Length: 233
Image 1 (cartoon, rainbow, N blue to C red):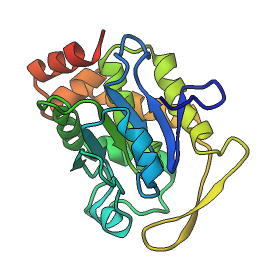
Image 2 (image 1 turned 180 degrees about the vertical axis):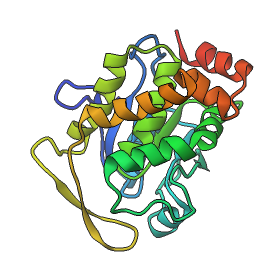
Image 3 (image 1 turned 180 degrees about the horizontal axis):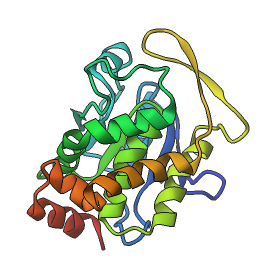
């Protein structure tokens, strides 16, 4: 299928940034769960290549206004689009919030949304699935980190996958401009691992573990076991 970029885990598909298979991390089965940036710029050529993954579900973690302003382009891909907005809608979030405060806010408020997204993976014929937000780093990174820890992936691999987005977004050499749904030019900046580790430490302090956090927000024991049985080798 598509080639890996520069020998890394990143996959090269036209119009789709920051794409990789989560399989191979720990005991996660390959070919079942992918992460990327949005599909807004996906051309027909990219869709044809993406079809080779056999995707059945796309989990979009963006807000409703983002979906309206910049909808995913799936062309003739036969996939179910499922929206799970991670950012709070009560006005407590705004784009100028410092990243560490944004991460803390997400972890404090998005537990039920994370659980709903993970539950969607257990539905019949839901897999293979692709999860994304806008650039596939922050909101996607938090959900993926929770799932990988739930699946027993070593912490150093979870962190390395998170930091791989710096390469996937082309920001290893500095910030890159983008236009948000309001038409404002902003900049994607490289992230440091402390953002992710701080967010995970926050929920461990309050719930003891990632598993405890997800169970406290509605994940059932049977669903927890189902995710492990389905996604681990």
